[in-house]
Image 1 (cartoon, helix red, strand yellow):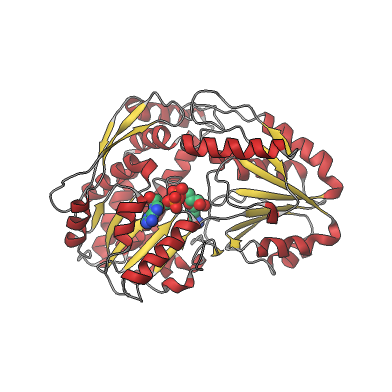
Image 2: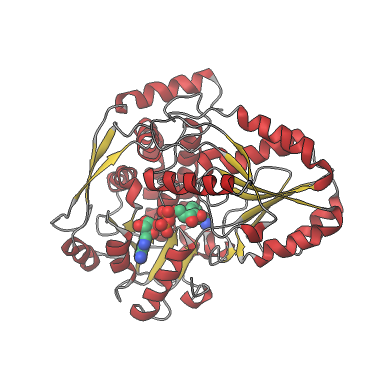
Length: 476
Ligand code: NAD
């Protein structure tokens, strides 16, 4: 438990040597690197802190990697052994990992610990399933990941593909290429062959597009926004074999219903975690809260009081609850969004943010319902609507009508209501009387429906090619 002094000291000691490290990263490919433009990485909480430098891939590097990629020939048992060794190395190097994700991605120690555990779980989970995963055809998989779980999602995609014996071309998010480089170096050190896992740092529109539009690629595993998944779907449809799967985990407009029988203190705690932990930069984060009208006034007063208690600041500091958003562009986008709601008289609550760094104070905005959300705001912004008891089925209809279906939360003490609601919902992950972020222990895989992805069955043991690209909805 992070709140135990002993663990805080342990984290402190382990990451201290990396407080000022400047990581150097670049393509890790099975061949000579030409290299493209250099890219400087700065700390989103303290932009004066230069975290490192990345050499991006050139076109020639992408070509070298595509030509060199070879499915991992070792048998399933040997692959499992090596993946478990990667997990051991992640654990042994947790100080460096915590430091790089804190300084590059703005993660608090609590988030960084959760991220490391998830990455290690993924490695051991897929290692244990190597035998059954090896039944499908092997090939070359492109894995494209987002910046918000720069270690866990990056590692999970790769571990699944490697456990099945594929070769992986990994394209990390632009904002978190240093973390990806640290991770792939540990994979190589553990014994994953250099032609089975190659790292291709670069932009989505260039390197990402090439790695998803090449006929030598047998499948794509993608986590990121719905719009990017749709773009990849189109590129694959034109360029790669029709049976090459696209496994996509995408965005969400996640709702929660709090009825008048909910335990208010518990619901408030879970809402704060679901909406504001990781500064709201989680695909599973709560975006639209529905509170039953009868309790709305006292309940929201309690919620806004809890928001006042949140500590914003440098995620390196152990007392920080909410760190920065990923970059200046995201910060400006969310600030404009909140300002517009304020101008329309819909701003219910806003917390002050530090002036230095890319911070956004958690905010609550009134909406009439989920239909009022035009897009996923990937930051600490909570939309709030109220509903009358007799309209609860209409709330479920509105949530389904959003087209997304990633996570959903329900706080109620009425057993029958759980069934009434969840039986009609079309979401990948429904959570009752708890927060709605993160996978439910023991029920991997995590995944969404509709615009949120190719479905919960897409991960885990079902990783082996199954989902045709057409299963993803088309159009923006
Ligand atoms: P993004 O879609 O902008 O980028 C994701 C990745 O795609 C990056 O590596 C990017 O470089 C790459 N990319 C961009 N354009 C590309 C192209 N044309 N071809 C190939 N690759 C391309 O998303 P993001 O901002 O990095 O991440 C945030 C999004 O991810 C949110 O929408 C969030 O909901 C979603 N997400 C979903 C899950 C899930 O499990 N469902 C988990 C985490 C994040």
